[in-house]
Length: 122
Image (cartoon, rainbow, N blue to C red; front, side, top):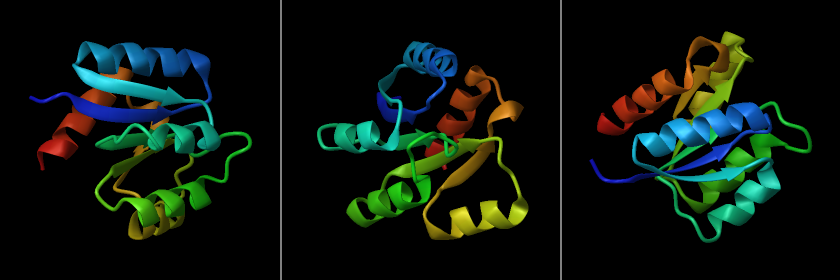
């Protein structure tokens, strides 16, 4: 399997470190960002296959961030990773710009890696 490029946008430093370690152990090329502005700046030089995006973050209008990403690149798989899970919201996000939604509390970092690998194999 080729090195998969992933941008992880997460404001929890402990969770970010866990994701970073696990994805790197699975041969992902990982770049991280703690907010939408940092993520947007990273996208100027890093072209990921996947963005793992926490949607509940301070100083972040993730909805506008999603729209901005989609207008600039339609090929990136965008995985929303959150504990928000009202079905109507999730359906709206998926219909507009997201590729997949994962409930953060439902997956360990290792399980998340496996889910993303499966998604990329589809």
